Image (cartoon, rainbow, N blue to C red; front, top):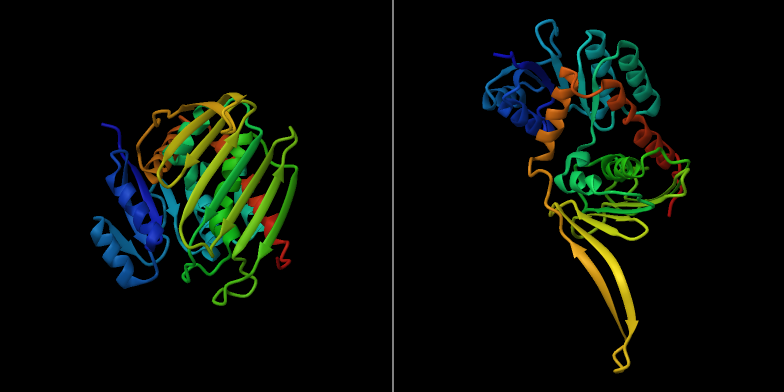
Length: 320
């Protein structure tokens, strides 16, 4: 029988609890330790998922990998400690609280050729995975990610929301953008200083493709929509409902009965590739990277581009 991958999880907050559930349910891994400095929270979560609570990162000699879902400001120190012990790492986005620290982590993982994965979870949305499987030559991407205001989110929308769709656009087009245009809006009375509430971003790519990405936390309902335009197809993705619809316009004719024109459009609804929860798919890929079934260097190379774009976006602290 193949031994399970022993995983240390850092963080028992909302995202950490979800990771704990996924790890504990996996038939390929076991949750070896749950790390959280808050004893009451950590012990309760550890008991819930049948593991051992510890207040700080333990020696990793008897563990195989680490998942970090702690506060962003703690990421750099934790990541460097994990990598220094030559352990694979799955770390929530953003990798660190600055592009410089993110690059230090990526450089260290590169130097050691260690698996490093970032929690850009929308890559594993079943609808996104299905849409990407049918792409031919995408030339225009429009993404909208709007939400009601959430006081618990102290950072701006660029790192909280925008990064997901920037990452999707980069992966859909197939290269990093060569141009980044952004405008930020600061509107909500309860937001921290310099924490943007709206980010409108246009990305230009070397092949001429364009991506328009909108993130907002002053909406009154949650919207997660992605439209991918090709020369003869429109692929629409609803990331909340997790469905994909493909439109292909085939004719448009004038009508002589005074009622305007008639158009014909073929509509396809492809079957989803998977119904698996995105966090479970992401963790399975992490285990595949550890096992050598997925190229670790190629995975690491997908992390920096979205972080570099967001760094450019937030450097424009001009008020809309």
